[in-house]
Image (cartoon, rainbow, N blue to C red; front, side):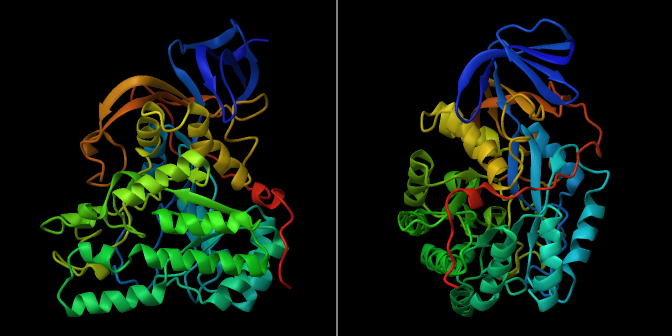
Length: 479
């Protein structure tokens, strides 16, 4: 057989193995893994390089319309599927899973149709959608959501905060019940909405409206309480639960306790919680708004706890929570040049820098090995969100989604070198070691020598199978 593409001489890394071998790619799939493959139409010399599965970023927000009534006054996301997927590709990510949001008073089915239209003809990487349910009406729970799950949207997110998104405990149970019946996996944003509002009002009355007030209104105990409550609701309804963007040790302990009782819970964290602290919000001239996300960054103790969670396996997945708002009057400063922290859009960019940061801080510094890096950033996401084994691994028959890394390359991150449509990066000036040189999606080179080789629109929508979380063990409900 003559292969379309041969990758020769690299060190292949999966979530379980590290081995030196050649790869043969045919019709977009991995067709051979052998000691030596010579016959290829195109040959890439990967000597001295790592050949990894393409990254999967399963927590990013792109071209997401704001809900009516949000305090951020309709701030516009800077990245759609085109710039977002290009940025992802340059960072070694070949599959993205952003969020399709249902706003209150609207149809979930219509929201999905709208989101498909926003993505059509734009993405250079493959993509799937998580569904966000903010209005669980009888028709949504009885007809729309079950039909969408059966069509391959098998991951659903709900919120425990934000005025326009928050669900009551009873509503969350209703969504969980549907997810159990249809075997979908649930994601939850776990922060206590009532305490946030109570604290924020008092901070504003005291005139403490600068961005640091965002951190003071959302302390770690409110994430701990909400995590405990979310896990209790999932236990009662009998569903596997993903706790997204865990920011410190307190919620991690709640997750450990739930696992010790036998419940299926998955923990996610993000680069900002390892690299930023509350001090990054305490900057003059509203500059702290650039580090505002929810939950907020914490402190060095929280960072150490997260690293322990990564090292000991408590944290399963590592995603960016890319939420791109520019630092201008259409983004972070939509409500004015000096708004209260309550009127600033939450979120920071991170699609392109996610993998290099974890590689440099985790692998290079000896905190995790290469296989754990692949598991956290690709394989576990693929399994959890019903994309494995076609995505997330290097195996015969899998899509040839690959990133070829120079593990010695040193780069100082600046916004000018990145490919998102945001006018800043919160990681400006951070030196990292290790960077993807060549990125391949379904056998097609999409990034090479810092040049985009792919055309927007080549990315395909991916339907999701049942999550691996349902296959871990029998999950019992209390009803």
